[in-house]
Image (tube, rainbow, N blue to C red; front, side, top):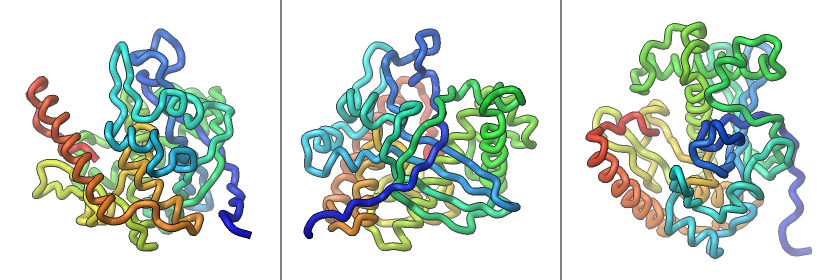
Length: 319
């Protein structure tokens, strides 16, 4: 028998949390018709520690390297959102429907599983092929309200997400890494913050990206890293060489959580999915290096435009 042995994916559940740019009802829509939900989260108390799951849409199982859609994504680099029109990196149907983690719909995913101890330090992690079903879609701006409403259906889950996030961000604050963390003085402040939802998702995505990179380093899977030294670098850059990222305490960091709208994440996913299935690597190291250089140029062009318009030249908080 030749070919791929069928892989039985464990079933996982969680919630998606997105901003008004991907809202489902008109009064909150900033970018109408966009529903590209590419990550879902779940957290569970296990003894004195925690089990965190970040499930990411398995774009690589549908969009194969070298396909027409893959080549389009490589040229464009990322999805461009606008008030009247969104230019998806992938086809609209793939981004908004087939691959999107829509509530109640089972989707193939790649899940980063992280075990934290009582001090919220990572003690183990893994990357798995899974099948994810979103329990619901929450709005970033609603997270704070839900976490203070014991009657809400997802109160317990959201409270746990906030608790984990608060402590993860407090660790960053101690290391003076994230400039967007101003005064993390505890959960009470966090719950009253209008950016609570953003902070929860950012913390969990940073955690997942760190562990994704460490998984690849451990198993010698070639990927594109995101390198940044807060003391010496003006901006973060992509590279096949792992030079470390300050947000990961100088260890490896790689974009992995947005494969529907960011091509580096999709390319990294191609590599990891192939390794998990025991398949040949779909791209050579030279090809990965060329992609990293090309996307760096795309980002630099956007940054120049942004700086010219806003006068803001500080992107050190970019991860």
